Amino acid sequence: MSISVKNISKSYGKVQAVQDVSFEVKEGEIFGLIGPDGAGKTTLFRILTTLLLPDSGTAEVNGKDVIADYIDIRNHVGYMPGRFSLYQDLSVKENLEFFATIFGTTIEENYELIKDIYVQIEPFKNRRAGALSGGMKQKLALSCALIHKPKVLFLDEPTTGVDPVSRKEFWEMLKRLQLKGITILVSTPYMDEAALCDRIALIQDGKLLEIDTPENISKRFPTKLYNVSSDNTYELIQDLKSYSSMHSVFPFGEWVHYADSNKGFNPKDLRDYLKENEHTNIKIEETEPTIEDTFMELSEN
Image 1 (tube, helix red, strand yellow):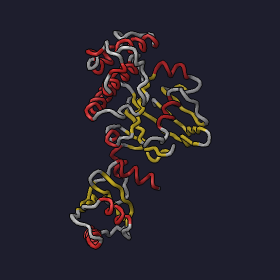
Image 2 (tube, helix red, strand yellow):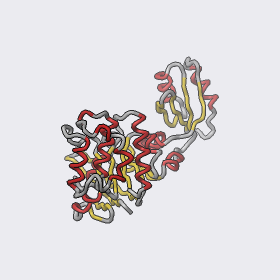
Image 3 (cartoon, rainbow, N blue to C red):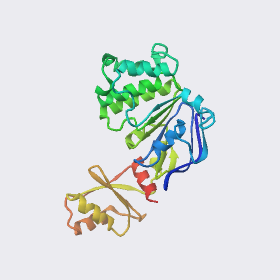
C-alpha cells in the first residue's frame, strides 16, 4: 500500500477534527477524500505530509511512519495545499527553480514529468506568480509539487475557485500522472470530481462515512429516487417534507430530489397531494442516485 492510515484522531482544543479514521490507498491509485469544509480533510493531509502530529493512531506513506520517518517522507512526496502558497514575488521560472534546488534536482532533470503541465505556463515563465490567473497558479503549484519526482502526490482541494475549463484540464493531467505510476490522494468538495477517482472516502465531521468506488457508493442509496419540480420550489420543498411517507428531500439544481419510505410508493399519489396544495406545472420522474445523494443520506444517519 502507498498510504496506510489506522485509527488516526486529532483534536484542536475541544474540537475533534478527525475521529478514529482508517483507510488505505493502493499504489498508483487516485483516491479521493470527499466532504465539505470542516470535514477534516486538510487535517488528514497535514498528518500524512508530516506537518502535523496525530493525537493517536498510526499512518504510513510508502511504508514509512509519518512520525519516525518524516524526513524520508518529505523527500518522496509532493504536496499542493488548498491555498496558493508559492512565492508571489518570484517569477514562474524562479519558483520552479527554487523548489528543484530544495530537493537537490533541476528543472531539466525531471522536465519530462512536468512537461505536459509546464508547457502551458512556460510562455509566462518570467511573470510573477502573484500575477497569474487561478488556473495558471494551479498548474505552477502542481509543477512545483512534481519537480522532485515524488512517489505520492497530495492535492488538498486543488480546483477550488478555479474555472470549469481549468478544472477539466487539471483532472486530465492527473490521469496522465497516474499512468506514470504516481499515487494520488486528492480532496475535493465537488461531487463531479469524486466520480473521476478510482475509489473515494466520504468524510463528515472528522468521521469516514463510506469507502468504495464512486459507482458502488452511488448504488448504495437505499430506495428509488425521483426528480420533482413545480412553479414554486420553496413551497415544494416544504410540502414534500410534510408528505406522510417522505424519506428524504434535498434541492438538486433545478430539481428537488425526493425519496419515499413506502416500498409501494406511487408517484401519482404524490402528484395528487401536490395538486391539493395548489402546485402547478408538476413534474415527477425517476432518476439515478448520485454520490451526492448517498453522501447526504449517510450524513443524516
